[in-house]
Every structure is written in C-alpha cells, then in structure tokens.
Length: 281
Ligand SMILES: Cc1ncc(COP(=O)(O)O)c(C=O)c1O
Image 1 (cartoon, protein in one colour):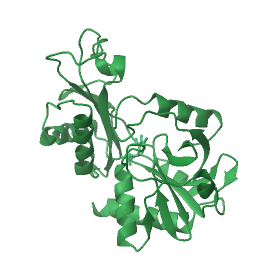
Image 2: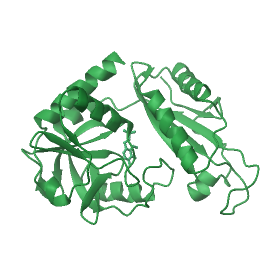
Image 3: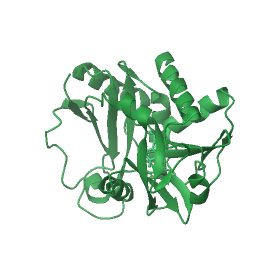
Image 4: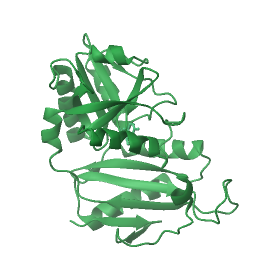
C-alpha cells in the first residue's frame, strides 16, 4: 500500500509541489471538494458524491472540465496504483491559477487534485464507545450546503473541541443545533430521529442520505426540522455521521450527558444496518 496523489488525471507523489502559488483555492478557498469512502476496494455511494460535486460546482459557477466517468476513472486509478482497499479518497477542484483578483479571471482552467492514504483501522472500536463533544457557536457563512474549500469556521470549531479534549464540535445558531464541524448531527427522542433540514445551514451529507433511507426502510420515524439546544440536552440518544466517521454515538455535549451516556439502542441498530448496507453495496 502506498499513499498517492493525482493532478488532472496524472498520478504524482503526495509530497510533490506542483500547484501554483497563485491557485485560487490557495488564495481564496475558491474551490470545492469531496471525500468518498472505499470499502473492500469498492467506491461507496460514488454517484451521490458526484451529484453533490457537480451541484457544488454549479452553485459557485465553476465548470468542471471532466465528465462523471472521467472522475470515477481517476478514483479507480488511485485505488489500483495505491493498492489501498479501505479508506476515504479526497478530491478537490479549484477555479485554477491566475494573477490575484477577486472576480473570476477570463480563460482560467480549473485544477483537479486528489489524494489517497490508508484509512484508520481503529474506527470500529471508537464507534462502539462513542465520543464526547463540545457545543460551539456556528460562525460559518450562510451557504453551508456548498462543499467548498472555505472551511475556516469548521476548522476553528474542530480545534476548539480538540483543545477541550473532545472528539467533535456540535454547532448551534442562536440556540438552534445545526451540525458538527465535519459531520451531520442527529438526536433521538421517544424513538423518533430528529435532524436539521438539508437547507443552506448544513451540508447535505451523503451518510445522512444513507441514514435517512435506513430509517425509512426500518420504520424509524424521522423529523427534519430545526431543534434547540434545550431539546438536544433532553434527548435519549445522539450521534454524528460522515463519510470517514460513519455513524458515531455522541455521549456528551459540553457538560450535558446525553441519555444513558453510552451508545443508545437505535444508534446501534442504525450502525448495524449501515454495515449491512456497505456489505451489500
Ligand atoms: C460540515 C459537514 N457536515 C457534514 C458532513 C458529512 O458529510 P458526508 O456524510 O457526505 O461525509 C461533512 C463531511 O465532510 C461536513 O464537512
């Protein structure tokens, strides 16, 4: 197994410095990204990731110079060349390089870069135990639905959690819980799953799509409506989801213990269903 990069279709060493210092991703965060899971050598929910990639591109008026098939091919190439079978593959597309000015330079060519590294083998253990989290203000902009490279709000939230010895930050806007710094967030109260609606205030997670589908198929009622910090504090269970995180129980938010303070039964059931879904994909 070896870690590798890819730039515009060409395999490179991850340490190589081939990006212009005037790339707009570097100067403005002017670009978009995706992280796609690989289980047993197979790309998981790649179509949904591509849907979101092209949707993010449209929202920031970036024309992706590759077809879906070509982008899938880049993923397959990285898998083949790296020999890695279980991980997340990172992909980003910036608007490209040009002398610095805010508006889009005419004739600029987007730059696609990707990276693959072995995944975290301890994931399963962590997912049984769950994590403690830190409640923080959601200071991000109002287009959190776009998966852009502008992640400073998310980075500061995660760093605050890290400095407090917690695994994730749970963000709220004026008392309404939105999502984690790199994950979607859910609570369960009286057998019903509650999560923020997929509007401009959260990222429409691909794992979120899977979880809501599993709920629907297994008779777990879902309410996609904003809920408050007070409601969260009274929840029976809580968890976060993300491509690399999968489904992770949340046992505490700041000083508040959620439910029993350990993984709840519906969370565990959803984890089992998700594992099945991955096996059958
Ligand atoms: C802010 C935010 N919310 C939610 C997610 C989860 O999305 P997905 O399940 O597609 O990984 C991410 C993933 O990076 C994220 O950054």
